[in-house]
Length: 159
Image: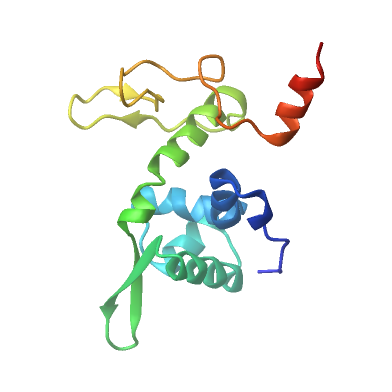
């Protein structure tokens, strides 16, 4: 991957996450991993990604303990890629992107995939809820503390 400017100076969890998974190929590899793709050739075939790019992204995901490898064949040695607990915690991110994409940027000529809750068998979508009261969360009923410096400065300048 080309060297990019680090987001470390932003001191922000969103920036740190974007630095790891903000690349479009990385996001699609994660999507495929959640959909059951495990093997290099299957990722390559499904995504149409160049082999060298796929090699780089899989190595980065393994180096950052989002995926791990497990040998499934000795001759020649072949490995499958599995989500780690850290990787599985990205499920909410992928589901949120899926929900937004279905609503605002659906594929023009394809049927949408439907997320089905296995326990009840119903179609569903990701919902962001408060872990304390179970209320829905959105931009209107949440705030970030402390405020970003640029926002605090703007608010303090308003009479």
